[in-house]
Structures are given as structure tokens and as C-alpha cells.
Length: 333
Image 1 (spheres, rainbow, N blue to C red):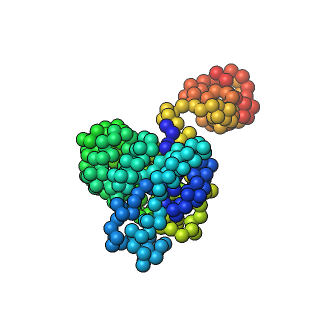
Image 2: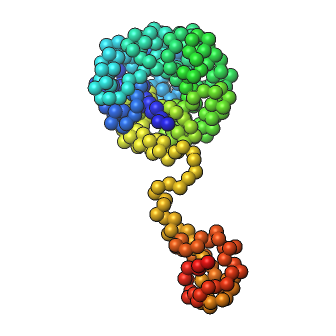
């Protein structure tokens, strides 16, 4: 099964449409399936006195409010239209996360068929009901949440018109960057088992090994932040992949998809020629005369596998040699 890889541009465009298009280029060249932005209005998203997270303070300063920071990162409707068209020209899918009902309506009006619910909205009843009412595919991110909160959110979506079969739940740790000790990747499988949903992983760790491991553990969706340059100003650049890293992650995931296979243990085409080389036949350990009885003292198993298989050992032991053998000759019955 092919993993849906979402290259999360997020707000790493810094409010600049030309930079946003460069991020689309990077996502397309990496082989990601979708490039994802964030759709919001600062006035609807945060109060004027809302504090920044500590990681945001360290990257953008303490004096500025969260609201002021967000205002600089908004994308206008015209920017959305341009980005959708540009994604089409680069053959990569466009996706954006709406953070309020009006933003969701904008994305719906622009033709979006997949809706991402960010971790911060998992306890927002009216928001969940609105998205559930669209009846479209949903990706639900679960940072900062408990299993009960995830189940409650899914129930709201279901009761509003979106069946569980259309929901993919992303395990997530909302910290930037997320410490390895807090990833708890096995919880992804617990979510699948407990809630009977498709699962994925939204990654905030440094590096690429955790999303790769998530695919090996059954993730069907991977989301990962990326940037043009980690040293750029802005809240999310430091915890994002740079272009070469994003491409390496995508390539590694595609390799993992091939390597997972169908689960049936069988001889593979690339192994066939090595059977003769690596397995053993029964051969003479020393010179054996005609009529001598084969025993563990005069026969042994050695490569290659051109003679009697070493698994036929018990059939050979106790039989009389029908001819003379020199050391290392294949025994015959």
C-alpha cells in the first residue's frame, strides 16, 4: 500500500507567495504526494493577548503576541488560488489545514476534498461538527490528546455525517522539536486497535528516522514539516526538514513500502541463484571405500548444494557406499 506523504510547508512561507511557490517546487521534486499549507485568520484564531509557545518565543521573540505573529503568516484567498494552480502545474497535490470554520469553508469552496483537523482543534466541538458535516475524507491529528478525546472527536465526526471509514488518525507529539523519549510511536498501533481506524503519523522530531519507522509499523499517512532553510526567521523553520532531507525521507519511505511486501514467506527471485551456493550437500569427509558404511565419521555437510541435501542426512547414515569416494565428493544413494 502506498503511503500518503504530506510535505508540510505550513507557515514556512513567512507570508510571501514567492517563497510559498518555492516550497511547492521542493515538495514536487521530493516526490511527496501533497504539499500542505495552513489557512487561518489571526482575528478568528487567537485573542490579542494569547501567549506564544516557548519554541515560538525563542524563534520570533517574546515581545510580539501570538496574534501579531500569526497576522504576518496569513494567506489570502488570492494566494490560495495561485498556490492551487501552481501545485497543478508542478503535479503535486495541494492541501491546507483550516483552523476555523470560515477557513474550512474557503477551502471547501476552492474544491478541497480532504480535510485536516489540527491537534489544537480536537476538542473544538463546533469545528468538528462543521467538518463532519462535509462528509469528506478527514485526517485527524492527535497531539496533546488522550484516547478518550480521540474517540470523542471521531464520534462527533460520525454523528455529523462522516463515517469512521473516511477518517485517518495521525499519532502526533505536539512539541517543536519533539523529544525522542516522548514520541511513543507504539501508541499509533494502539489507536488503530482500539478505535478501528486507519492510522498515520505527524512528525515533529528532528531527522527522518521516526516517520520511516512509522511506515514500517503501519502508518498510511506521513506528515512532516519542511523549509527552504532552517535558519530562516519564523516559528517553525528550526523543526523542519531542508530540501535534501525531505527527498531522502520520501525515498526511504518508498523503499520501505517495497520492502514490507505482502507478508507471505516464500523464495524470492533474487535468492534463487544463491541456493546452490549457500546451502550444503552431503559429501565424503575422507576417503571412503566401496561397501563401507556411511557414518558421521566419514561423511559431512559442505557447500555447494549440488548433491544430496543435508536434510537427507538420516537417509544416508547406515547405508553402504556403492563405490569408492575421495574427500569432498558428493555422496550418492
